[in-house]
Amino acid sequence: MDLSAEKLGVGMAAGDIHTVPRGDRWANIFEDGDRLIVSAGTKETAARMGRELARLRGVRHVVHDREDRDDRVDAAARGRDLVRG
Image 1 (cartoon, rainbow, N blue to C red):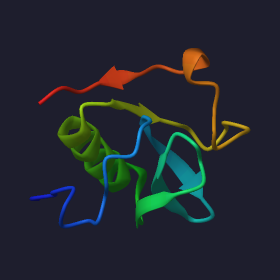
Image 2 (cartoon, helix red, strand yellow):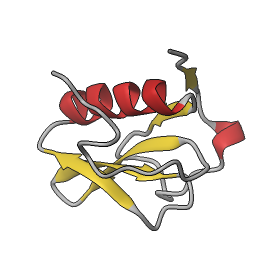
Image 3 (spheres, rainbow, N blue to C red):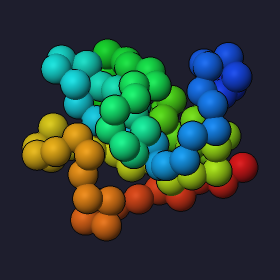
Image 4 (cartoon, one colour):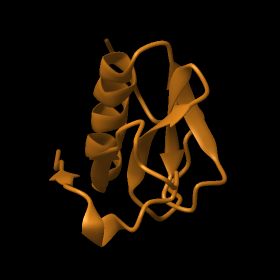
């Protein structure tokens, strides 16, 4: 899968990328929690896309569980995956 930030219309906004549950789908959002980047039908697919986007941007990728109470989870309380190009 070839994901490019330019193809997906993702600018260079600050903040880590979080893979979070959204209803019956999974979404990748910026850390501020307000801007959806892309969504997918499964956690695995969304996480794969989120990891690649984080790599392209040089930011961290955080994958959440359905049990997380807040989509904008306290980043210090979650495991993080720093992905560098």
